[in-house]
Image (cartoon, rainbow, N blue to C red; front, side, top):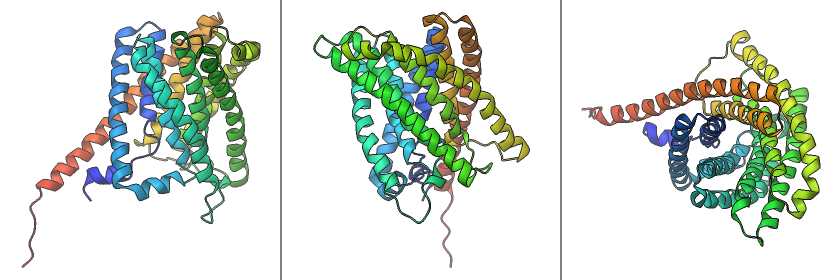
Length: 354
């Protein structure tokens, strides 16, 4: 198998996190007024989205057995929810650019995928019986289920001004539904991951960047909640508006508390135990939470008139841009290596033994 086919066969289920990370950094830059760089990242996110769909379809057609195995693997199956979140994040960025005609199909696709994946993937995971305890395999990717729900809530909030009076209450209800499910899922996933840590422990090798999603899932709940609070009136939105408004600041504060913990865990992993810091697909699961925290902080600073949160958001945005650039360059290096190895393999002369 040549290097390209090998890379496709082993393509990580969570690679759409690259679109999520690029898209949310673009959104943060847009909200901060850095429009040229924001636009550049928007088009990079759109390009990644198209390329990844092509690669995932290729993998599903030619490597069905590997895909089926991934869908049933508790350690990576929930990473497929990055497809939902990436679709919504890209749609939100396009909507901010005024491209609602392009964003609307993305929101509708994300809603469909959210419902399908929300029932299919957990069923496949929970019904897995391969002799290994499922709880021992819970990890940071499980929080992506909650992220996907919150991303749909943001998408519906973006779509709300463009629908008619008949569809408006349903869009508002779906936004509240997605936000509520996301919050409950976060609590459930946090409990399961914590139980895993308590009962089975986590080695430095197992504590990969995907655990940053524990913070990112709360940060996106802040943005989703703020978006619902700002939505136009509808029965469901009006019923929960005070409750959601009271929770977003609490969620943001908990995000702040989690960041030193996650940074310390990274030091424990790479400095104390000397796990090599190399490019892996899950690094994009660290880019997105940092960018999402920046966007949530900037949103709180403007919408809720919290200057301290806005200042934190500006600093976090600078960090997010730097981390995005490093991971993006590392990804390009990996892609070029795969392509180069493939070309070199094809140019090697065929040896014929006498």
